[in-house]
Length: 254
Image 1 (cartoon, one colour):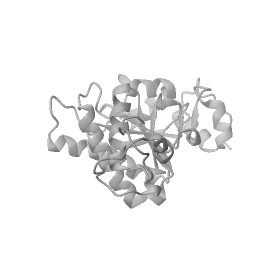
Image 2 (spheres, helix red, strand yellow; image 1 turned 60 degrees about the horizontal axis):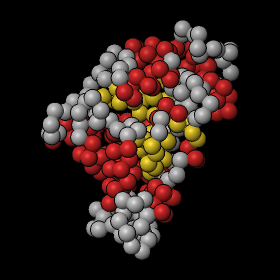
Image 3 (spheres, helix red, strand yellow; image 1 turned 90 degrees about the vertical axis):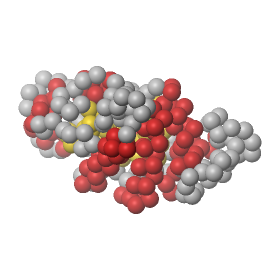
Image 4 (cartoon, helix red, strand yellow; image 1 turned 180 degrees about the vertical axis):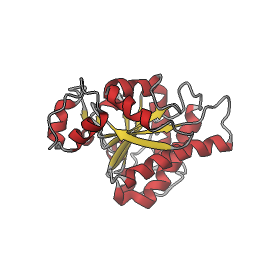
């Protein structure tokens, strides 16, 4: 194992990255920026969450698949506290931090994240790049740049948003990572309408999981706003139909 490194004072991101790679999962906990981190096993799968559903989904867009429903989760909370293999950062093109979730991730991970990002020399819209997670419970951060939208998104902007997710997932496979958490990319100051973004996200994740479900343990849709949680609770049953819907009542009462 690499020599002991203090992540709070270290100025060498390469040294810190090497040090962290040599630690066991238990040893890494000592270096998390927070103590109230959330383990993946504490995040309910969609299959578990949907057990509390009432009512049938009118014309779900996809067939029921219990296996897929075990691979997807909806979680409302702080993405920086999730202990998963990778969290995805809704970054700006500089990759040097910004507002919203981007700023939160950089603050939680510490300055070494910005130091490594500086070596990546920016990122184009729809593309994704990966770094160490440093002081985060997540081992890696996948940085992706979503489209900036004014009004209704165009087909090309929808394709760019889709690429954010697909390119992030490509990095997941490339680095043999088994779990990832995604924020709501582009829906903040970048202006992508929340409902339209959710449709792109769910269409993309459903199609990807159908092809790669054996290669990942879990994909977490991590929302922060009540509005986004409500949108996903309403839309998830159409893309990931529950196995056994209850008797009567609206699907939104999850």
